[in-house]
Length: 316
Image (cartoon, rainbow, N blue to C red):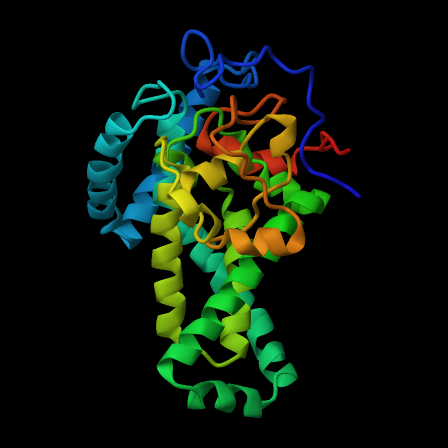
C-alpha cells in the first residue's frame, strides 16, 4: 500500500530514560529548503503578496484578530507552565503559521462552499427524503449522537486517505512539515487539504438533513480542540486518554519516529483508531522529534505552491 510519509533514516540515539527531552533540550527541526538563487526583488514580491492575502482575509473576517488574541492569551501561558519540550514562544516558522491561521479559514470555507454547491445537490438526490425526515424526527440527544458518529467517521477516513493517497498527501504534508509542535502549529494547513477534510464531514451532514447550525458548531469545536492537541503541553488525561484525543495522542501522529508513522487519525475519539487498528499510545513516552525528512519550503506562499511542484512525493 502506498504511504505518503517519507522513508525514515537511521534512528538517532535514544533520549535519557524517563524524559521526553533529548540531551541539551530540543533537537534541531528538520532541514528547510535553501532559498539560494532568489533575488531580493523576488523576496519583496513574495512578501507583498503574502501581506495582501492577510489584509484580504482580515477585511472579510476582522474578528479573527480578537480570536487570535484570546487563544494566544490561553495557550502561551499554558505552554510555559506545562511545557513538554523546551522551545521558544516565537519558534522557527511562527510568522508563516500565523499567516496560515489568518488566511486559511477563509480560503478553506470557500472550498467547502464550492463542494456543497457542486456535490450537495447530487447527494440530496442519492439520499431519500425519508432519511432526512427520520433524522429530523429524532430527539435532540439522538441527533447529536448521530452527528458525532458522522463527523468522526468522515474525519477519520478523510484523514487516513490524506496519508495513503499520494495526490492528497502532497497537500497534507504541509501540515506534517512542522518541526516544533505548539498550538500555533495547528494552523499550518494547506487550504485545499483543509477544505477536503471539512467537506468530508460537512457533505454527509448536509445530505442527512442536519441544520446549518450543526456545521458551525462543528467548525468552532474542531478548531479549538485542534489548537489544544497540538499544544506543547505535557497533558495525558489519565484513563481518559482512550476516550478523547489529547496532546499525547496527537503528538504521536506528528512524530518523525518510525513507530509514529500513519497512526492516530481520529479527530476526537481514539476508540475509532482502536477499532480500525491505527491506535498508538505508548505509556509514559512521547515522540522525540517531529516533521518530515525532506526539505520544506519557507514562507506561506511557497508552502501553498509546494504541492504543485513536479518533484515526486516519496512513498513506501
